[in-house]
Amino acid sequence: MRKRIIPAILLLLTVSVHAQTIHYVRPDGDDTKDGKSWANAFATIGRATGLGGQVWVAKGTYYPDEGPLGIDNDRNASFIFSLKTDFYGGFSGTETSLDQRNWNANATILSGDIQQDGIPGNNAYHVIKFPELASGCIVDGFFITGGYADGGTGGGAAIKILGGDPTINNCIITLNSTTAVGGAVYIQGPNAGVSTSVTATVAFNNCSFYFNTAAKGGAIYMIPPDGLGAIYVALANCNFSNNTATGTLGMDEGGGAIYNRIEDNNGLTDPHGSTLNLYNCRFTNNT
Image (cartoon, rainbow, N blue to C red; front, side, top):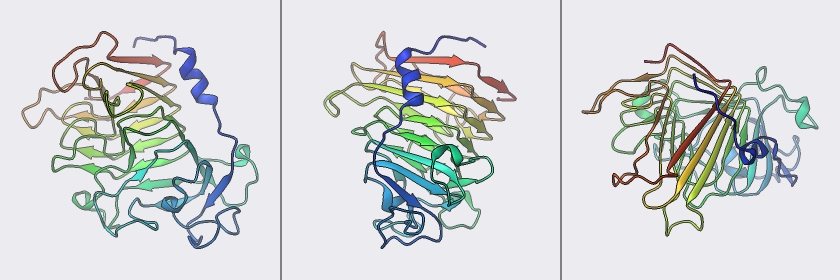
């Protein structure tokens, strides 16, 4: 395993906290309330999305088709994280500070199993999306599971990153699958002309990737933006286990855990296109 020093800018992302308003979410909450305390918590993450500040989410299972704008059982539904909002899971629902939560004991699950029937073919294509015009945010303390990206929807069944500078901490990303590339995570920088920046900086810290499947890049697939631009991805203290690249759909097998492509979708190579930094990561039984 090759180890490299993570650039200072990525280390800063790991400790950044947007000290703003807190909104609360719990499964027995109420989206008609103001969400400004546990007693008045929202019921869905969708209700809290776009409000800025921090969102504290109590233990339970949440689905992307829920919320004020959700369409029941819509496979196109995703949690859209596009503003500078920090999402924290792992709360029991009584805490008054972040350091009181326990994300291992209080499982906070973001699930693509929108029909709640255990049949992957009915699941959301992408559990979380960061669109091209997204600003950076933190996602911390969640289980992300059950995404199934088929039907030409592209990769990233758990997390699809098309822009912004997200930081993903303390997450378990498991049992996601795509017939394309990037079973759990697909990362492509914003394209010139769409975003004011053509650089995306993505960090994963203390995350685990288990039992994710794709044609290429079982857990993570990363590709530069089309045209000039670059992506920088840092992984620190992460575990990759039992992820699989099947090599189906006429693709050669590659990247049971991670596939880092240096050419964009047009086959062009930028010298700064796709940089991957690994620090203290562990890889076992990826094929």
